[in-house]
Image (cartoon, rainbow, N blue to C red; front, side):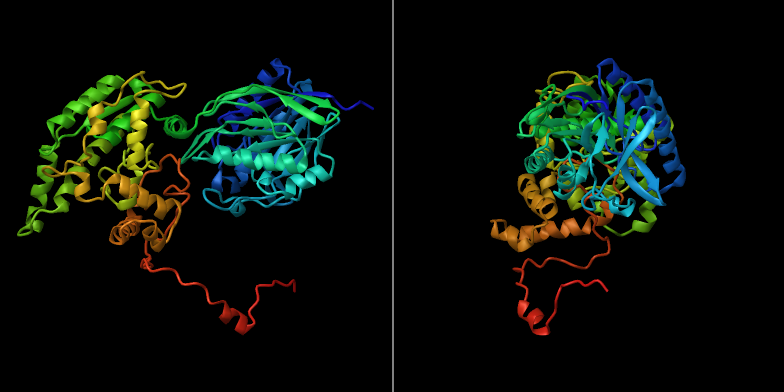
Length: 578
């Protein structure tokens, strides 16, 4: 009988799959395994559902897709007969007509073991309970005499799966993940992992997917912890990499050694997520490049920088669409910003388009005073022209509205909201300013744009304006952005009652006004382009409110529940098996 190994070399495949591209993901896995073999690995660990791409949503319910994933896994399993590294592969798996989120151990030409995800997340951006069956509590798999536990992603956020692995003789925890980026999540993952390590007294290797998928961005940042909770390895964020972790068995169990990299944090991480999210949306949908409206304002300037960093200057086309209210300052700022980035820039006046629409509507609007309707005609003329350019040249139209505007409805449907994707959709206006200043002094690794100041200081310093009427400023219609964003953060991210926000020192009428704008704009948000998620709650997958909704928070203090009524009725929450 072969003695258990006292040393293991485990490769981490922090890679960027594409949802639905089973053949492409399988080939990426094949190349990663070849690299792991070259590095001397015994085993290579892939992220959760790597063969399918994550999240596959309802695509994973298609029998043809399930079959394609299984066939690809079986083919890869046969290839492990070559004596190279074994593979832990995340994949959908059907067994007894039940669909599981699974990990398959492929070794010596066989599917040596299967483990199924137990805790299926069903909150925020996740809805795995909708498509998968939960698996049984997992014991470890035997790999060359070493008992390896493979809890899948959410399985380490509660104690039971890891406890089961530890109680059944597990020695090492290898955790495949597809955990999307949002602010603060890196620390949360680490804290959860440390808790499991401390409870189980087992070392842990956490591999995370990297890349963009629709609204979600996965930043990687894979890591390893020794059984004492010390960090043994840290891979970089927002980039693909294959790395080797070296494991040695001692008197106190297994210890890991691996590379230690610095990861992006704070505003730098937010900016890097916006770049990666836009890049992958464009690349994975096979657009040749992007086009967008360049207004001379800060939102379009930041989007221009993000697009250039994501795709390079040659694939970015900026279009200034001036009307009579467009200032010379805006024209100058737009030209300066595009020149600094080195991107294509052209000016297409919209006077004839707006006047043609105005003339066409004149009989219907006879005797009525001009109002926001005529302002919206300008935005819709611009939107039509930009969509036409997208259609003609095949470039994706980037829309440039920020989260403050999406929250309050300060945007025009079929106008400035036109577009296929929005890289700053989840950034409040104050954060747009902050990231613009950041980009002028820093850019993320792998960015394809130029160094230095790419957003003119005047764009950052001047008061924001939509320039749809004479001397218009955003604060004619909205509260100051620092105040507005603070209230929106409490209403959207924290779901705080109005009374709580008022008690924190905010003006009651102002909070009620902002809450009203937030509620009334739901129908616009339903029709908005997808965009990168960076906050706790983005508009889309995270926050799904009904459009028809008569409930309003009055701002009164919330009454305490009357527990005496429940007690008097003898009501109980106990459940019984019948």
